[in-house]
Image 1 (cartoon, protein in one colour):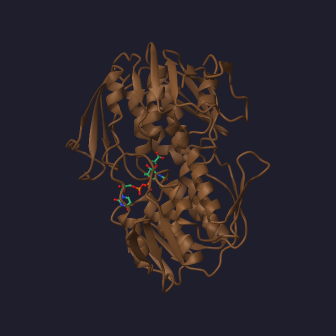
Image 2 (cartoon, rainbow, N blue to C red; image 1 turned 180 degrees about the vertical axis):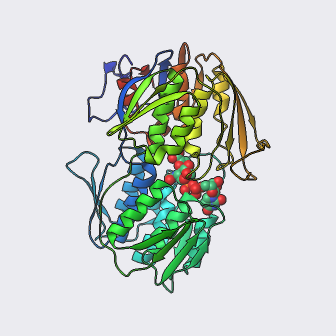
Length: 460
Ligand code: EPU
């Protein structure tokens, strides 16, 4: 990057360490340069936001460490604040103190102001029902990667004794007779629905048995947070979680698990641009499945005490990958990986089994010269590890294809990241619009690109 230009004022605005990034929505990227250097990842977006909600369940303040400065955190912070929770920044960067002692019901207008901004509001249900006997949930946002229904959440809440009403304001949930433990079986190991059950069951009367639970490392970290608060939660093989409800919980002090989705994204950026990136804070254990695929594609990595280094180990090779719930290959990893696969020698196949519309982003890669065909109803393939789901899609990627610049609009968080690394891998100049979405999940994204030697300007 030459500088982060404040175009209106014509002044250089390169952020210094710790400074906020310039707000901008459009990047001009000049590609063809490898990304090299070191970036740090903080706590996982997909844990931090949930741990913030969990603070509502405590009778005393909580401290959360390793919190990234991303817009999803800001949304949850202001939702907590409109519910009377005091949220303060701690002295150590990335630390939040959350004091729920003044928690109150929020006004509909305040909640509605967050409508469409994030999917986290739905996880306020259990804590708010315990605290106030009522929860109001606005229309949900998040990435547009499929229908993203909330039926598992609502069915689980009903099993705890909640009453769900749809009103013109959104969804109103009450618990006229309190919440009691329940036997719940999820039709699919949904991350959000598992968190919904955990956040509700910990203070429900009696024991809850959850079958078909998601067991992502971020969920295990949420269980650790809840245990610190006084919850009694155990798990058994085959996706069974048992929660013995307790009457009261206290606050917690917790450092969030690292963001393995961000770590995998930078690893793919190293592959795609033929660079060399050390991701500080990344750990091997939670990335085993990713690292296996990374190695099969021809990537080289070195696990060190403070992070993992990623680069190519030779020519890139094609792979067949099926996304799946943990311990499978995460859906969040396939988008950046596909950018690298455009440079592999041969045909790769990515079966997306978690969301029904998470391959649409490949159209823009084709605009940049890639050869990717999406099969909207998936393709039959023998020896599949994952049982085929009705909603799945498949992408067939033929490589290697030279990539050239294009004018593209970011569709969603991971797709947006992928466009940026595709543009960095391509020859010539690209314009990537709507980059604000990337701030939902990647902290100091532009500063990190700058550190890695990317050549770009913020042009709008
Ligand atoms: N589903 C239902 N009904 C429900 C809930 C889910 O049919 O009530 C379906 C979804 O439509 C989807 C599948 O179940 O097809 C999986 O959804 P899940 O509930 O597991 O996802 P989520 O909790 O909404 C979280 C992450 C996603 C990540 C998925 C899968 C957060 C805030 N989001 O979403 O992260 O892809 O789990 O691991 O934790 C991202 O970070 O880019 C992202 C999209």
